[in-house]
Image 1 (cartoon, rainbow, N blue to C red):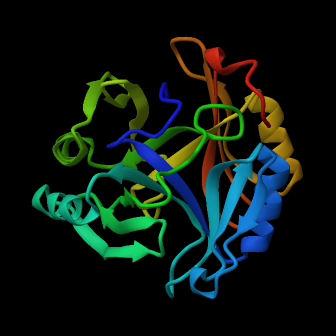
Image 2 (cartoon, rainbow, N blue to C red):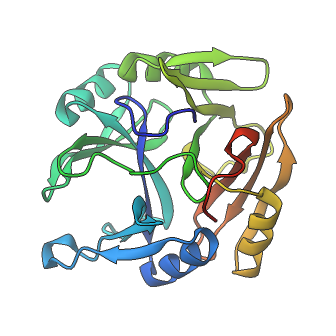
Length: 260
């Protein structure tokens, strides 16, 4: 992710929906150096912002719906949530949660692409999104895992205006000011019960050290640290103690930034 601030059409927010928000806050606080700041208003329902060196990096929230799994969700910044939700449907997707106001923070909707991968639309109010990106401890990349890459290549540019840079192994998503994410085709190595989904990667100073630290805190390894062909990029994928998958991400030009 080359952007240092959120951009319209790009990823702006990640939220950990958790069956045990206190445990999630503790785990990610130890791993990334995040500090919780709860919205104490009763109507906020326990929503908690996670701050990195004082800047809002993500959030942790209790589960609101029956059957909702503990998982990370990714949201993209839009000018109008209602209009973009209609564009999602027109492009072959669906609306999971109709647009609604999130107190004074903004307006959101939960939608799904044609393959069922769920993501959020965020229309800024008082909160535009994460205040820090692409430094250790903050969001560094987002990745769509799907079994229908051709449908995704048509859907997301139609809804958000993304550029798709396809290669033999990987598609990168981008806007005018740089790439921010990618797409991986789910092959036979993915169990059939694993649905298409968006996976957040958090930038770290050292993937191997952070993966080991996560393991010591109770996380399990889904993909051990590995270098990505092309140089300068190393990643790992983990499952936190509550069951939510997330990635670790190191790109060489980020070395030297402060954080966990």
